Image (cartoon, rainbow, N blue to C red):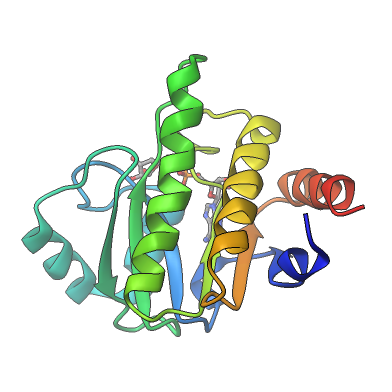
Length: 175
Ligand code: AR6
């Protein structure tokens, strides 16, 4: 993989709601009506108008993505995607990869040039972080190879442990 791909990827530790990028990705559920974890944090920070817009969408199947405005958040858009509930089957990996590729496709379609992802499915949905990290990064790298419009893709991890897993993986694949 070319260095130019890794130059467009950033690994951060912190709270996704603080990021001032074109878009942040929400790890939602199929109702799109809010929940705990990063979904709860995004809805709290965006304000009630986000829920109003989500209601109009009428849900989102696992692996797909939908876009809304970001209201009181510093980002311009929220891309809501629904990760798989981890079951330990091959289908988990496919659905998780779909979350990343469909979010990135939707971003490009909306002229978004900078976007941040949380560790989709790695909280309430129980996906093992190492496996999820590999799918997240591999899918994103393949996408960036084919799309020059996206200038920055950040992965923002809440915990130090998860951050370290991502750092080690990018270190290993970018050599
Ligand atoms: N910024 C960045 N990452 C965060 C933040 C934050 N503010 N808060 C939590 N995380 P989860 P899932 C991390 O459970 O596993 C919701 O109820 C967290 O540490 O938010 O996809 C939805 O409505 C973890 O690493 O999402 C669904 O019902 C990662 O975000 C369900 O949970 C994902 O954890 C989705 O579960």
